[in-house]
Image (tube, rainbow, N blue to C red; front, top):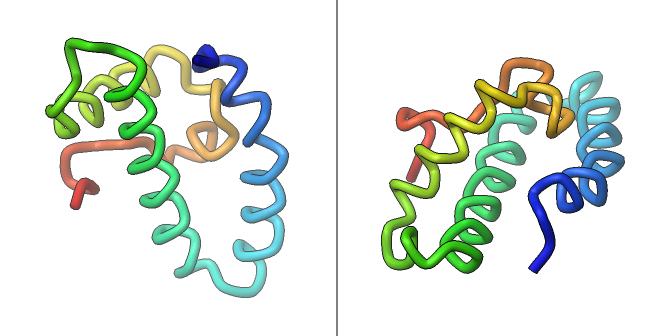
Length: 89
């Protein structure tokens, strides 16, 4: 499995492009895109760490804690769009 830092380096250019395009033309679409990114990151966490297996809500919460500590890790986290319990589905 990749590390979270490696994963961030690989998807940050895509996130930057989404923010550049959708932020200018469809800013309301960004929320859906970022929610999906957070869901996929939570799935990655549940696959990588045994303690989160079958507990996606806890993985999402863990990501929220990481986003507060490492706010510059993912490009959209720098804009204040972080995984929170209110955003889960």
